[in-house]
Image 1 (cartoon, helix red, strand yellow):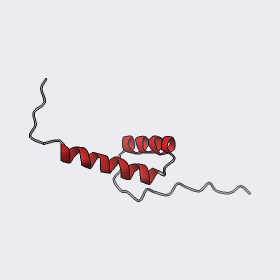
Image 2: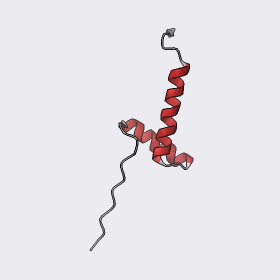
Image 3: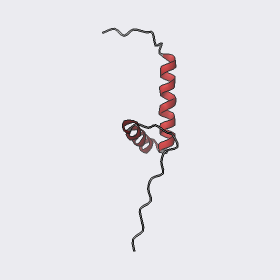
Image 4: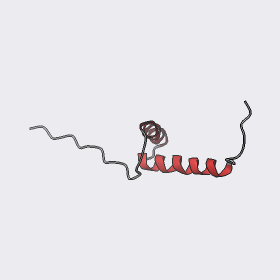
Length: 61
């Protein structure tokens, strides 16, 4: 009798879009991290960008 394949454990970080999950998986594989670590780094970077960029700044077209 064959063993059942174990399912991947869900990420401890909730509300992950499919694009974000794909990017985190790629980043984790390239950098030798876990997917959760990659998601944490990505989200910290997003927070840093949103705090350094003023929301009232207008973009020039």
